[in-house]
Length: 156
Image 1 (cartoon, rainbow, N blue to C red):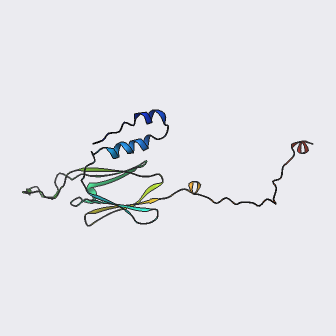
Image 2 (cartoon, one colour):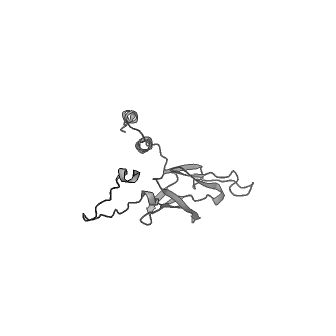
Image 3 (tube, rainbow, N blue to C red):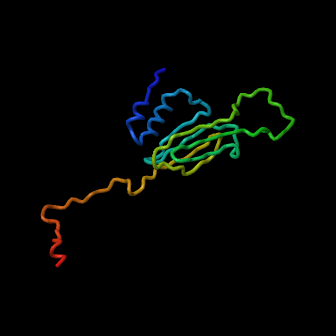
């Protein structure tokens, strides 16, 4: 596998740390494949992450959004069947603990999370503040000249 040394960029740039960290994560092949997930675009500024969490109850899952990172964790309780005398002879359904992290773009917020049919759905919306949205600038014609106030006339 190819590896890239981004150290020269760290030395000569300011404010791009997060970008280079994302490149490092994308280049590494250490991301586990469990649990599987989908990322869908459900609207112009709406997204949905669906994670397959079959066998996990609502209390065994946690979702944390901190800064620009969304972390989904799942941890099975010790007594999953509620019976002390049961013994699992074969485990074909994965029930191992997991932690899956997603890097969110600026202004993306978690709006809703739901668990249905073994899928955890996390709805995201990108809400750009008014100050950051593009705005139209009116163009005046040449007949209107700007008024200049003479500072010497004001002082008199």
